[in-house]
Amino acid sequence: MERIHGYEILNMTLRNKNAIVDVECFNVLFEFLGLDFSAPEYTLASSPADRLLMFTCRNSTITNPLAYNILAMDFELWSRCSKAVQEAHFDHFVLLLESSKFKRFNLKQRLAKFSPIRKLLFVLQTEMYSHQMAPVLVQSLTTFLRHHFSADAAIKPVISYLAANLHEGENANPFE
Image 1 (cartoon, helix red, strand yellow):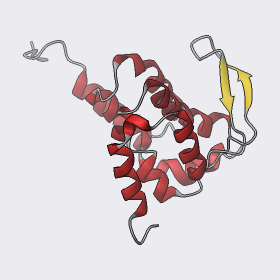
Image 2 (cartoon, helix red, strand yellow):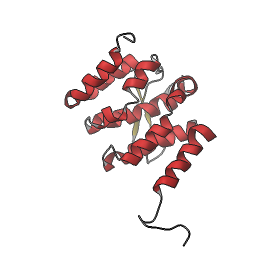
Image 3 (cartoon, helix red, strand yellow):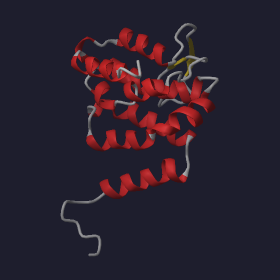
């Protein structure tokens, strides 16, 4: 698959056929990437802000980093899908970082290489997703910040985002 750029071809095919990508198709694709839906469990969410039930997959880990980077980390691809698929895409980050027994491995050995905080901040900045998806996007971003809070991975990107996007008006002079 790598030699013939199969993952890139699959990505382009999904982009062209995003209208037919449903939650079941998403589940099949993400099982290939390492999420384990074979023994799902439902647990109560930790806070009222979260959903009432949280889907957990204890054995989920990223098995193919190259495919994961090309397919799962392509936010433009998932932004074109239905709202249910978008929610599932953002929720899978929470699954990998909070409910999987391999959460430390997922973060340190797999996800940290993809700069997920920078990518999520870029998605937030570009408004690729509708405003209805903002709470789910922010929940995923918060999960990454909580589990991977370091100077290079979190602090610098967040400060850069805030400096670039928090201003009072177009002609606001900070020196006045």
